[in-house]
Length: 95
Image 1 (cartoon, rainbow, N blue to C red):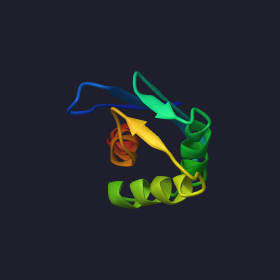
Image 2 (cartoon, helix red, strand yellow):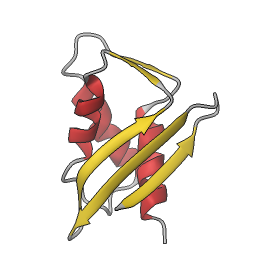
Image 3 (cartoon, helix red, strand yellow):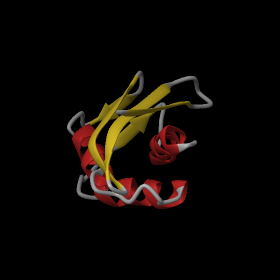
Image 4 (cartoon, one colour):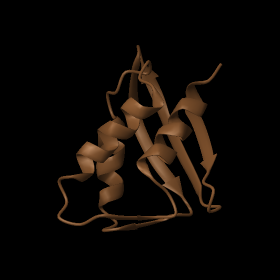
């Protein structure tokens, strides 16, 4: 299991845990001390990363998350962002 963390400038912690199957992220779990409305959007964020190539850059990972969240009429990420989640993923993959 790989684990990455990122503390946002506002002080909220974003954590991402996942495994690799070849070059793909699997069993993605996103946690932290941030707030998200609606709460079920958290599963959408994890699903957006599921199967993503580990070689994707931070911006590409954030774009996948942002695009997935467009399925909601209204989403509010309080204390974190798609970029913060993507940074936590890249930190987990750093050598």
